[in-house]
Each structure stands twice: as C-alpha cells, then as structure tokens.
Image (tube, rainbow, N blue to C red; front, side, top):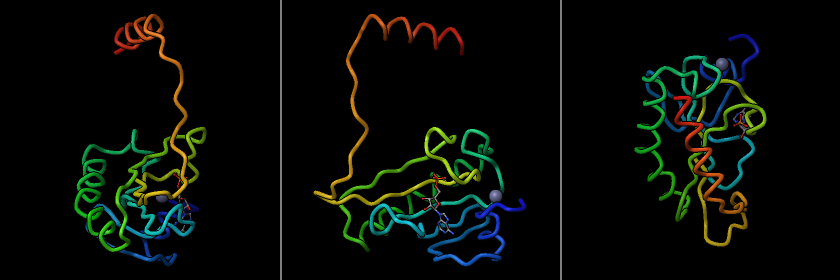
Length: 135
Ligand code: AMP
Ligand code: ZN
C-alpha cells in the first residue's frame, strides 16, 4: 500500500535489518528498540491490524515467533520476552500494517508492566455476562 512503511520494507524499497523471511512474514530489528534485540514480525500482506488479518497470516506470525524468539533470546542473552500486538492508536499502534513485537526482557531492565486495578467481583460478574451476551 502506498505510503505504508512496512509495505515499503516488504517490497525492498526501504532498507531494514532483516533476520528472517518466508512467503508470509519478514522479521526485522525495530529501528527504535525498547530493549536490545527488539524485533518486529511483519506480515507481507497489507492488512491494518491483527484483528483484520487473515487466519493464515495471523497464524504465520505466531509460528514465526515461536521458532525465532528462542534464537533471539539466546543471542542477546535475554531471560524473557514480551510478545505484543498493538491494535489501534489508543493502544499505541502507529503503523497500520499488522506486526508483532518481540521485546527481549532482562532482570532489572526497569521496564514497567501495566498497572493493576481493583478486584470487584460484582462488577466482573456483570461485565462477563454482558460480554457473553454479545458473543
Ligand atoms: P506500533 O507502534 O505497534 O505500530 O509499532 C511500530 C514500530 O515500528 C515501532 O516500534 C517503531 O519503532 C518501528 N519502526 C518504525 N519505522 C521503522 C523502520 N523503518 N524500521 C524498523 N522499525 C521501524
Ligand atoms: Zn502496508
């Protein structure tokens, strides 16, 4: 798609630090890494986010993550990883072409996780019913 950075990377019009490629997915280093080894798995087909991706493309991202992540971790000596999809601008998505983040984590890396809220079983019960009612 015109003006899409990841389409340009996929087509070779823009350079990247490529780690892996197959017919559905390309893996590359994030140019503004959160931690050392921060990798993006970008699907080759332009779809706006993982909820709009085909089943096959979404599955290919997960399959690639499962095979590539241990190699990344071993190389950068990470103990753990976060695997994240940002879906929508309010969730931090800035490039609207489906991609998965693999973010290596290290003891004492100082990154915060999400804050935790209050437990409210009454409210949860109502909300669970409401969501199930909308399935
Ligand atoms: P998101 O915010 O989930 O849409 O993630 C987009 C990611 O793409 C960010 O982590 C950026 O640092 C990264 N990024 C932006 N431009 C490039 C580029 N040219 N090459 C590699 N990564 C990029
Ligand atoms: Zn694109």
